[in-house]
Length: 553
Image (spheres, rainbow, N blue to C red):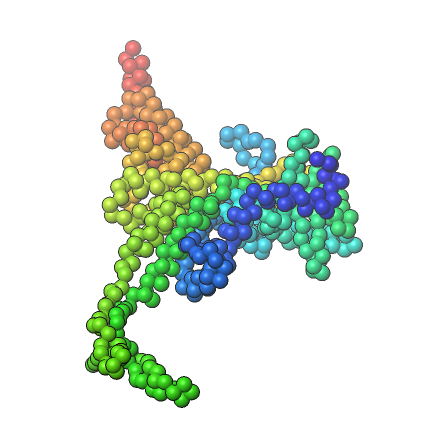
């Protein structure tokens, strides 16, 4: 692969096509499904069709009129997105240098963090970044890869340069973020040089195709190059970040899910067709239709002119067999007239097929918990395992979104630093980003069952916390460990002071043994002060005893 600085328009186009090739069909089909186009010019029909041209087209036209669909793919995509990004993510600005256990940022550092956070929070709201990330996540679920890009619109450029006057909030407002369609952009890697570049194409206001590449120069600075007009930015200190980011995960909306949604649509369509065919049918065997014989003025022969068959309440019809005339001119009935009735066909088989397809979609997408939520026969363990499967899949996506969030906040912050001539702060400040998993409404009995499985060591604490909707799992885990340590320390103090307090000892032991409850939740507010008072009383009593013994001696 040639150096990124020497890339041409055609090479950008080729590399984007190559990156998109593996899942281009998935992306196109999934986009149509999510947008409600399940027919897709006949490709969405999973039933049999005649092989001959005219008959095939006639069948397709008839099926299209009856075609009925249910957008289950949109349902599972929305549920997964809500689990990962339904809540506003927690993000922030941190010091890059490590702090000691009890150390806090210096006053000037904290003031700077507050200033940056205030400016970034305003930018986040005005740019509706949460919504952009939701769109990016949907693209990720449709094609297994998705691209984010930050840029400064041309309206802020004067003769190709950006006005760097103004404070941090002013410069941040110039920075925009967008989702790049997978067939328009990619982040590629030159393995021989261990370097990466972001490449994309887009159309300007005049519908001209523009090609852009972003890469790091030899000094580690970020370069943005517009190949269409040969404009190239000066080196930007973005902490080694590009202005484009690509995230990936296993394909969520798989071919199997599309097949099952087609099967479900087929069952619905057949049910709809069966409704039309569900009226009582009459079949007349060897019966003369209502009508009369009239003489044809052109041929002079008698012809039968059918009349409408009357149906409805109070209607009476007389049905006779056809009459024929023999060689001698005698008229006689041709056999016996008969009427057969066909009752409507049951929809049971179609309903079962629909239910099976729906269940298969939820299982394939790790969302079987939504199916058994209203199933009274499902066991508590089955419900928990289904919910755990959903949460773990959401956590896999969360890790990808968290990385994208860190890149986004840091790169935007660093670009604003560069535009305000504060790029020295790039080495001082970083970002944190945490999607808050939302498993949905968890009934009280299920919460109790989850806690029980943790106690029986059948479920990890971190997974259980995610299932219960705990926002910052790492922080809560640290609290739990801290609570156990505090409880142990208090138990040692009670023992050393020879304090006999069975009730308090039992509470402290429960914190240590369960290893799942916060100390301040387990102990009432007065308990800790009671422990301290009793310890102090014991110490005072021993001191008095020692003083008394000393005086006696």
